[in-house]
Length: 104
View 1 (spheres, helix red, strand yellow):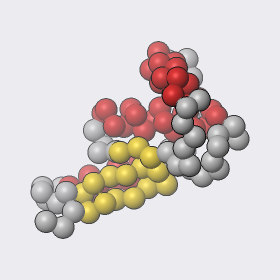
View 2 (cartoon, helix red, strand yellow):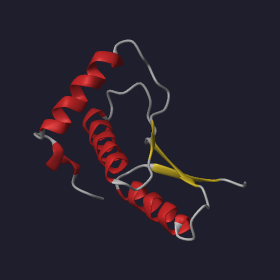
View 3 (cartoon, rainbow, N blue to C red):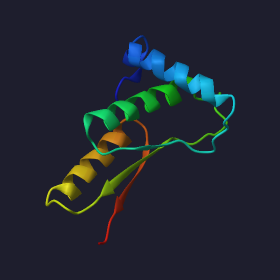
View 4 (tube, helix red, strand yellow):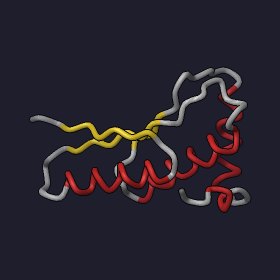
């Protein structure tokens, strides 16, 4: 698994933790899920989510790993491969993962 503690002192992690602290007192989720396309934005969000869950493990109101959800739209020939790569990445950082396939 990727060393998530490397994110600890980054501005992104500090901002992410602050944003979640502002809402976490009002929300008690039973599950955390992140949409992951495999692009840079959703990959960054997945990394920050994994870091935050790892950092707060044992103090969270749930005891399961977060979910990663990836859509395989099937509109391009490489979409199935990209969805599989996103799933593998998510599992590598500690997520449970599901690829949702569209049937048009």
